[in-house]
Image 1 (cartoon, rainbow, N blue to C red):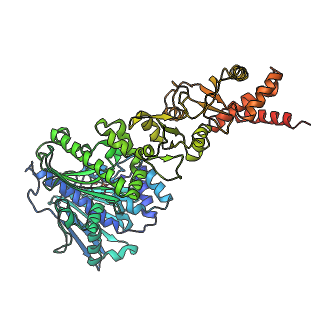
Image 2 (cartoon, protein in one colour):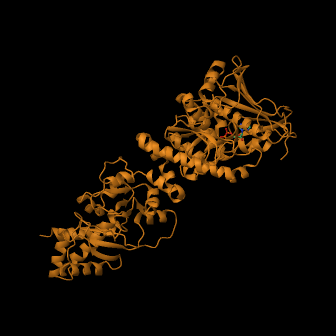
Length: 615
Ligand code: ADP
């Protein structure tokens, strides 16, 4: 596309327009974050040029001191911020500035606003931080020139409504200048002291000098290279906020200085207090910044962590990686592999320590990031055992909300108990009302309650913990030691036959139950059948799942079953018995949330009630 010296107008895409509306017309609690966003963009641009200059000297203004300059005119209420970073080409201006980079951003921000979260606080995390300037101004100008020797200068302007304009300029200097006039409601920012304060609050750790007039306002230091004891918690928290654009303090930090083990690096890592984006879409989150010898070479180095740990933030600084090779080479290098292995081990140790020493924090972490971390059990076989130790579950004998590890569970196992029991379902309430739990309740056997969707994929694959098999209690083949085996008498044999005959289309088999205490019947999975929750998950993910028939178990002690067998003795084709058999089956289905026709169920129930109430 060609550009001209007269301004050309470009329309924002529909999604961008909506986003702008959202920003301009939402109520903000912290409009000051505009400055954090602009400094952060300038600092990114400087990092990129610093890295580039190491291997390329065909660059505009090569070797010039890298810095950020802010000017403010208290009388005219104007502001500008200028960096001599990489600058922007025409394409950068139209593509990076004019569009919403990540899919789902708009929906997510709308949702946050409905929940009355502070969108302004979060805006920097969604690749649209630049637009936060519209909280403090009605019109913005960007003047920029890319580092390429043959580049042209451009001026971009927008009032943040439906369009922006671009024209060519004869800007000489490399980098970007952003300027505007503060709007009526934001005039407090036309004050050097105020700006200094904000910079110290949000951007103190920018890697480059930030100058207001001639004065440098920030502290430029590599915090991760200092010893842990020399850094105050406050400084570390500020640093965290600076690198992540998060507005809350982190939950926990880990400072590392690793030598040997084939890898050498320093790191300052954090666990955020909350997950701000859809956790499972890890590709959309920024992770760790990679530095070599104090120079940032990547601002989002996903390869340095396994996928299941990509919620970790912070900085890794190593001298093992060469600066003068491409990112692809760095990513695939043996050094990178070694760093990842060492880093993963340290992070898992950190989590384990948190779990034992700071349980509250650990549970917060577990609630927010557990679903992602657990997936490592099926992907990182080298660390599988360590990851299994990190699991926590609610159990049937503990209060709701109380979390136990497998180790806790095993330490409480009853004498003679050989297996670890679990039940899967959607909510604690639902699994607690399952008839399959009755036996375990009666004999005070603890059962893990798996109600977290990922657990259904993870736990069955564990098979064994501390030499004890993990068993789903609704499987047909579970061994229940406590229950006395009763010889089946002839009567129960013929009752079973009657049930089988009546339900031959619906169930795989009908058996005498040893797990029921209060309920008359239950449905269990055949030994080869798929776990019910798994079946549901597979269907949700669009897989064809052949309908597997369940095994029905009868509680021979239950009055209904005993009555049925008496009636059956008297009359083999008794209509009400037949209806009761189907009703019992469907009641069990209802409990599982799997009843096909409510109408049939209720109709039959009314018929049975009618017969029962006849005088
Ligand atoms: P983010 O910085 O999270 O990507 P922004 O909306 O703040 O989102 O910025 C969008 C893009 O515009 C940046 O990714 C970058 O490519 C470009 N950009 C913004 N400010 C500058 C700058 N000062 N110098 C060079 N490029 C910039």
